[in-house]
Image (tube, rainbow, N blue to C red):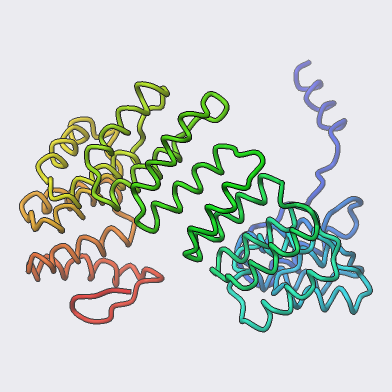
Length: 384
């Protein structure tokens, strides 16, 4: 009886939408997948294009795009490549670029790493597209990734003419852009002129001061933020920005007070990043004993010991030439994060500063044996 029910269920089950295909990262994979998809109604080649592009397979996505019998605007938006190429291709195919096109191109991984000519061609399209606040925000995000102040100001002018400067999400992008371009005063002007500020607005402005060493200004803005509570309450990112600002300016007492405040008043448990930031603050201030005392509290419970805490403690030992403790932290870092090439580079540099040449060579040999990408040996004491 049970076998009969199972057989009936198998007969009633619908056929699979896709034939079983063995995944591969080879360039021929799109051809193998795309052709079996043809008989199935309702398939979405643009979705496959997006999947390949996000997976870091531009060649596979390009081949799939070239073999499509018909290409619509969605397919052009999903095609990998530079924004300028997509705009020219859409114009040739008589598809008008839209705000969605700009959003797709701006947020695509690697899109911002273009030559200046392609970047300029892409932003010339701004004058011929009916944009909305989200598209302008995406354009600002692309400019922020390259710290391109000139094009960012062009986007801001477009936003002013469009009447979108009152949108909170756009103003937050402007604050982030000006901060990355080193224009903290311009970021503060945008912040002060905002009609509605959320926690992202406050955190972005505090982080802007933090990144440029204005610790007192960051603390002053945080005190002002506390006055608008409970309309806007700080979160974990806000306190991380404040702690970073204290570390950049050597404000040890204020940093310790913030670490206690976030748990006592706001009920936010400090995470590994917060403790790592405070350990880095103590190390910069030359208080390595206090940093070591805090670090030892995590050694007892290894479950809470993270790579960021070990890195902060190792940097503190390196700055204060505490070789004995640094050697212990290096062993802990290898236990917590052994597969990260950055950990081996940091340990090697620490041993080199301590003139422990044999210990410094070992992490370098491990990285070169593993063939880690993005790490290149330059000379005996430096890495890229």
